[in-house]
Length: 251
Ligand SMILES: Nc1ncnc2c1ncn2[C@@H]1O[C@H](COP(=O)(O)OP(=O)(O)OP(=O)(O)O)[C@@H](O)[C@H]1O
Ligand SMILES: [Mg+2]
Image 1 (cartoon, helix red, strand yellow):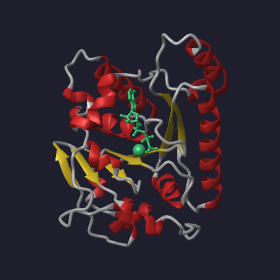
Image 2 (tube, protein in one colour):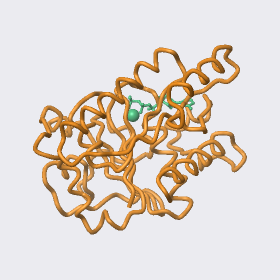
Image 3 (cartoon, rainbow, N blue to C red):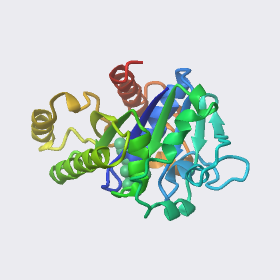
């Protein structure tokens, strides 16, 4: 099982969008995939048209409360979800210097049947993000292709480093930065990309995700890129991105 957290304290950069769409591509490839939402906003559930709190399945809050019997919600074949809701906020102020509670999922038989776990996080530098980082083998940072975003990426990397230093047994590998909402027609884009390549080298994903109406509209229709036809740009890009990610984690 490979566990990957998606982090950035900057809001609206595409954390939830990348988690949902990569997860649906993985599931479609036959990999048993679990999404864990740690964001009080609970956007993953909204995207996938699922209830945020459901008594029949486990929520991330339940796990942080110490629940050992973990029962994820089935979304479609091979795609499961542990949703989050506003209640998770009660775990937000706790310092996790005593060790991560979410990390206990690795001892759970149900969870160990998954090939890949993707963890979505809130746009904060909080203990909920630290929980996600402590639980993960890997993490990546989505970013918009804007000059100010570089600062956001730097801050996210420092926060991860600080978490690794402070929280016991935390050592996720940084997979890199994924550029999202790219418009290559914009004059400054090529300059921006080459500057970022210069700074990040192999930590910049080769595949980027374009700014696309179908992606912007998909939460409204509760769709993932797989619901678009095989030749849609959104689908092709997310399939390429998923291949690149799988290679990076050795799958
Ligand atoms: N490639 C894209 N093309 C068009 N719209 C996009 C793209 N990626 C994301 N969006 C839209 O941008 C908004 C923010 O995306 P998303 O919710 O994934 O960001 P986030 O980082 O999870 O936000 P938050 O920090 O609030 O959790 C959403 O409305 C989403 O549909
Ligand atoms: Mg989000």
